Length: 495
Image 1 (cartoon, rainbow, N blue to C red):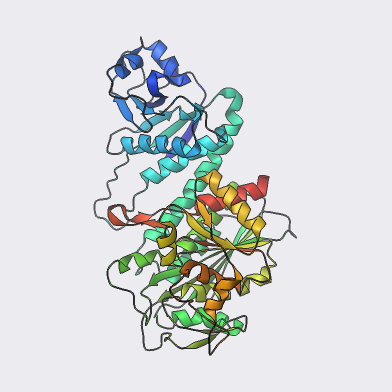
Image 2: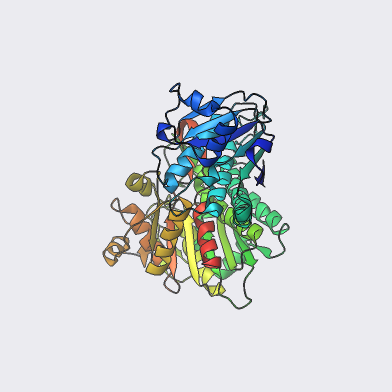
């Protein structure tokens, strides 16, 4: 899909569909009012029929505009005539692009960037239009014989005042970069486990490195990890025929001596639970256990496209977790790269075993901050549902920065405590710590486990088990938390 900006008057446009907004009581946005005036009040006449009363997200087509180069008008309700919240602006956009599904419309012109949004400038609104259009248009058809898509729009043009074109252009560039990063994350996540193996994930990272001069890729093999003493990480892959990989993406866009931001993403390309086998129902969705790793690749792609003036390290420990005669057994004791010993009480708590050695490995980059993201605990889904991702960390400033970025990106977070009392649940009679803390506070005790390997830097953990993919009839990857992380990086780069 192509995106463009337009500053010309509406009555000069050639488009299959013009998107305009209307508030309750037939109060029109500036573009809607202008078009209404030039078309003998056709918009007011149609609205007078009562088919669209301006309720938020209500849509209505005007399928013919006499003597005009605009083929159709799509009216979307904006609710009460007041400043929209960012969430309500996005709801209106979602309604628009869902409405465009299954139509034959090829070109659209969207005037909604003119709508006043609280704390949302033209740059932000332009980005949102692209992000939501991209999310609506995405379909995974790679392995379908019939690759026909539901979304036929090929070009979306966003109107903007000539005086503000620079701001809109910046939003356009950022929006396209973020959309590309989200698409990569979704595609990798939606691929089946027999295709997207640890080796495949490493190959995609290497391919990404060929696209950007400032991005370098390195892949550690199992022999390399053995030499480093990564006993926790390597224990997970023992039950699989697929070798583990530790993928490093090194983006150097900042000053040579500037400390990097390190992003770590769990890359469990399929998780059957190991010897502690998961129930069969819904196990197919465990291909999504690598969404953290896919997020790292998508975020680095977006950062490289935007040429952010930052140094960013992406680390993706990739493996499978399957039952086998050589797989981890409950009761096994592992020696991590840090030297700490771990008693495995549940082999399905494997993500933290991948991450703990990767956190130790991150020390060598002398990081400014470290952020890990993982589909780590079903407990997070129970606690928070599918609206926010869970946030825990050892640095209030970092956590506050992530929450601020989440509010701008509309990619919600909710912070949970990381109190010393919870560490008691990880005590083991036979090792330095156990890999699970019992049935209570599972999300928190998982983060407590990780915190013991993140003591040498400022660290935050994102549990995305409830937000990385949708289930049910609309099953598929969401691309989260790429919007959150790219916004965080934008804030770090430009304040």
